[in-house]
Amino acid sequence: MRHLEGAYALIFKSQHYPNELIACKRGSPLLLGVKELNEDICNGSAFSDSKFVSKDGAPKELFLSSDANALIEHTKKVLVIEDGEVVHLKDGGVSILKFENDKGRRGSGLSRPASVQRALSVLEMEVEQINKGKYEHYMQKEIHEQPESLTTTMRGRLICGGSCKSQTVLLGGLKDHLKTIRRSRRIVFIGCGTSYNAALAARPILEELSGVPVTMEIASDLLDRQGPIYREDTTVFVSQSGETADTLRALEYALENGALCVGITNTVGSAIARHTHCGVHINAGCEIGVASTKAYTSQIVVMAMLALAIGADTISNQARREAIIDGLFDLPSKVREALKLDQEMKELAKLLMNEQSLLVFGRGYNYATALEGALKVKEVALMHSEGILAGEMKHGPLALVDETLPIFVIATHDACFSKQQSVIHQLHARKGRLIVMCSKGDAASVCPGESCRVIEVPHVEDCLQPVVNIVPLQLLAYHLTVLRGYNVDQPRNLAKSVTTE
Ligand code: AGP
Image (tube, rainbow, N blue to C red; front, side, top):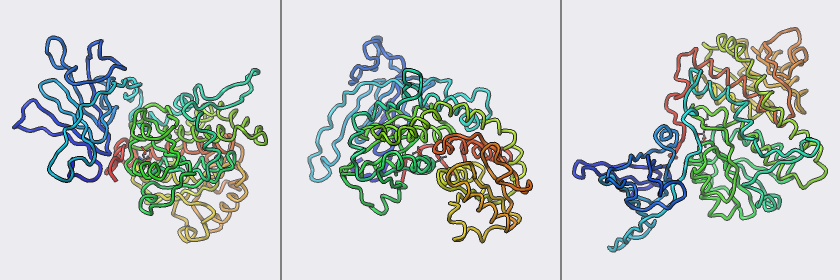
């Protein structure tokens, strides 16, 4: 360990040391699962050496895993192994030793590692959550679960007034830090992939309600540039797994620079949840498909709630906040309505399954939807797809337009609607092969003379529209993948948690 660089979680077994196992980690996640504990070492008690041998001397079952999902069918009791710790399993007993980072690196005297004492945690998930149920794939299940996952994300966090008029938002993990966030010089969102896209979708409402400038950072790029992060910044780390290596490194970097670090993750006890100063769990339930779907929509909702909480001290935006809170209450039913497009998206997938490429145009709140929709298509359907900011159309992408290339345009009703209408006209003029997503009832105004294929989605408050709009694109990506015969839940070359840089 003293010689290794980078992130790792390793398990060693040797024929020279039968009945022994050594595990260690730095940067990557590692959990020790413990099955059938005695009463006296159940949740909350401190862990120490050899307690895992029962009175009759029989060893308990012990599991090592990088992910709680793999443990849950065996045990809910886990010990989260920290960086620099070494787990030693011998003849059914366990000891955990902590090696100080730099001790013994130079010179001859290797310091004696300290023995670790720590409480066991209990995983808050059920084995049913990792079953596919009536669905064929996890991705399909997770897409269809979204009305419920969104409800869970919001549970206990939206507070009604006396007349049950929606009033306010309560984010327990942040309440002591809201003043600091309001006073910060900038809010910096940091994440990768879908989590970055979710933050991008929430950015406009955060800017609007908080009045604080919001900037976006892809974690790896921030690290490559060693971009400036200041003590006066609030940095928000968005990650489904809470273990993404780039995001974790960016968190270490922000901590070193003295910024307030907020975590938004789906994984209780993950490295990002543990190392940030405060945060919000998105409570979307465990997500198994490599393609992130329900975590994306829950992340947007949490960040919209974050915007509401930060902006709660401003009277002038009260009506707007109330409208958004009302919209949040209605959101699960609107997503349920959008899920009814399943068959329509399957038909569209049949039409597109042999294409090489798909462009997705969006702007404003739905620039993120374009990026995320395209990411889903390329990630699982293995079809080239690009999300394009519609305002950039004439600065390059327009050259690609012809009668063959399918183009998906998101034109739901918001402040950018007329601009999107104009984009559609221009694409039309170049004989573009258009598929337009619009708000219910808008078909005639986006697609005069039925010249293109239209997908109508339910209308919600503008800042929540990305949550509804991504649903048809998730369904499209799913059906394209099945039709093209690729692995839906484990796309080639990808991993659910990217724990190396
Ligand atoms: C999403 O479909 C991807 N699998 C990927 O982009 C993912 O969002 C990214 O690796 C970040 O993961 P995280 O949210 O666990 O940090």
